[in-house]
Image 1 (cartoon, rainbow, N blue to C red):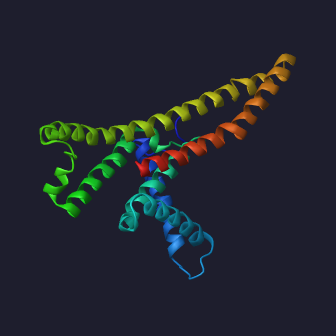
Image 2 (spheres, helix red, strand yellow):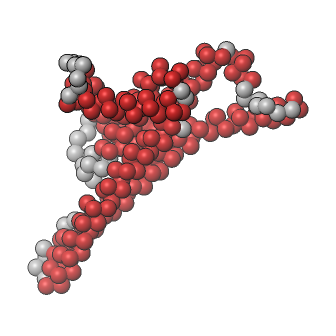
Image 3 (tube, rainbow, N blue to C red):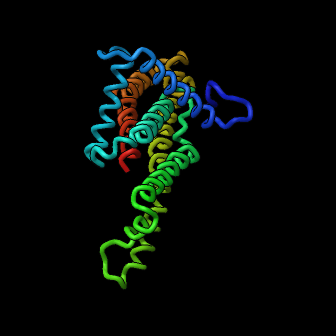
Length: 231
């Protein structure tokens, strides 16, 4: 079904991207407006979240990677929030749209190349594409590395899109099976078979969705945000 909220002439994934941005900006404002030495409430929660990002950066890049916390944490939190938005009935998860994922992937692609050129210089940075191979193999290695780097935005985009879109389709199928035109509707039809089979089936589907499918989708949403940031 269409989302419960949409703006005329604006694609739904753009509208819900703005909603995610407003939500994250509001959380950041609440966490920082009355910053205290002993954090409480939203400030305490956000400090815990940022500590996890810092720990991940230190483990992967080292302390010299801490200046890139704003980029990494913003991407991670944005992708996580937009992933979870798709689990709310009537809302549109922006990461189920290729355009949103491609935009995030291109930001990462241009950012890490720009950082590499700024840190090492253009010539030195390009030399590392040739790898520690004999001189005769350096042109081949350069072409292979270029193709590999160009493929990364595509892989990031399709991985996130496939996992989130596929999961939402599964949820939609389950909801249709349980809805008024499915098991619950059959249970309310007044027939004895509907009351027994439809009612029991509806309860089983609800228990399956709440007890297994939704926790699994939440886990996948968190993992996909983590994988996108790590890659």
